[in-house]
Every structure is written in C-alpha cells, then in structure tokens.
Image: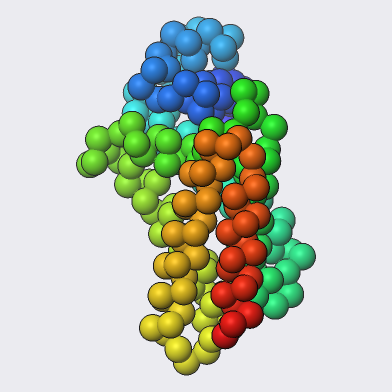
Length: 188
C-alpha cells in the first residue's frame, strides 16, 4: 500500500465513521489526508471503491481484535465469548469523537440495497455468525439445528448490543450481552 493510499484510507476511516459516507465529500478526505486530488484517483477508481476498501479495512480491524481475544481462549465456550469480547473492544476503542456504533452497520444504512458496500457488510456479519457456528459446533457436537439457532441468537445479541452501545457511547451493553450468552451456554 502506498503512502498516499494509506493517508487517504486513514482520512476516509475517520471521516466516514464520524460524519457518514454520504456526508463526507472527496474534498474533505483529500484535505484531511494532505494529498493531491490526483492521488485519490491514482489509488481508487471512485468514491465507491474507496468506500469498499474502507469497509474491508473495518472488517480486518475487527478480525484482528477477535484473533487477539481468541489466543486467550481455550474452550469452545471461551471462543464464543471471544467474539463478544472483540465487539466490546471495538466499542471501547478511543475514537476521536466517541463510539457511534458499528461502522459497518452505519455504512450499510446509508447505502442502497444493491450497493457492493452493503453486500460486503452482509458478508462480514455472515462471517461472524459462521465463526459462532464453528465454536458452538465444538460445544454441541451432533446438534446442528440447535447450533444454528443459538448462533443466530448470539448474532442478534451482538448486533443489538453494539447498536445500543453506539447510542450510549461505550461497551457496557456488549458486556451485558456477553453475560447473557455465557448464561445461555451454562444452561446447556
């Protein structure tokens, strides 16, 4: 990745999250990045491509948080809870102007239904659910229907709690969701 591309992505990451995709113009991104307009178009074919790259970056950031939490998890139960903890880490990150919720869901709310960026967000959320399925399968071998249902419940807990955390500006709701998930697994 070139230096100009990194600067543009860092600027877009902050501005898209703080102000939204539609409210953030190319000129604001270029100004914050401190690069020439030509640098933007040398690195990205369009704003849509920049948005898609931003969404991929957000997904990679979450995966890195999850991988860190996963390293400390030994059991399938702990691995499920690592997903919740990575969401909490995301909510507790020191954003310039505070936590505003899931950047991916915020972006999806602004994009048309058929937009590639919106599809990228859906793929990320499906990947999170697949991670839950994998860990729950290890916890409940041979019970695929129950695993899928519990993974769906946990995915809804995660998304609901991260949305509410965005309103409250901290990860408290995600911690509560993690406790609920732990209690549900203890009841197995």
